[in-house]
Image (cartoon, rainbow, N blue to C red; front, side, top):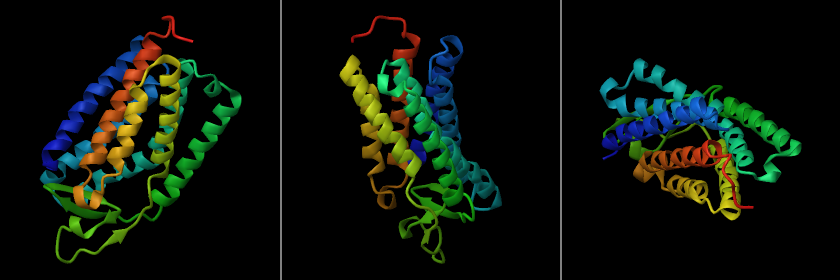
Length: 236
């Protein structure tokens, strides 16, 4: 089933990317360019996973897989900047302070450094096979072995930047819900947490990547609400 889901994720992200680019170019909506950048990275991620079985295990797929790890290490932290821009557009006062902006940028730089050190330097990636999906990973569970000679690999820790970014998204989403009755962003963050909690060893990446689809859609919908229509009167 996973082999059919990842191409669907690519299509969903492409639609979301078009929406983000429209909001960025036509309406200059705050956060739209950063969201578009993140979604573009997710399109590549899901596309390579979708094509893995067709490309096959080897140097070509391994080379094409490396940008996926670079994206997760260096691009993901920018979701914290995007959510800050969205929060400011939504009138959340604590997000529009010098202290918050400095703190967020320090956090982004720190997460990029941690991501580069733990997720890229000396990283060894190995092939993984599950439900028709062939990909390269740094963490290999026995249920994802491609051959009887494979060994369990634990090459990277939890995605700290993604977890922190989603926590901030949830906080901002809750604030937007309380202030404006807009619950989409909070719902997207909750969906991402639920999807990420699904054990990858038993169910593969399908659930977590589906959560990313929902989260990015929630981002773009929220950018539209508070960027495209930011001149509309809002509830205080």
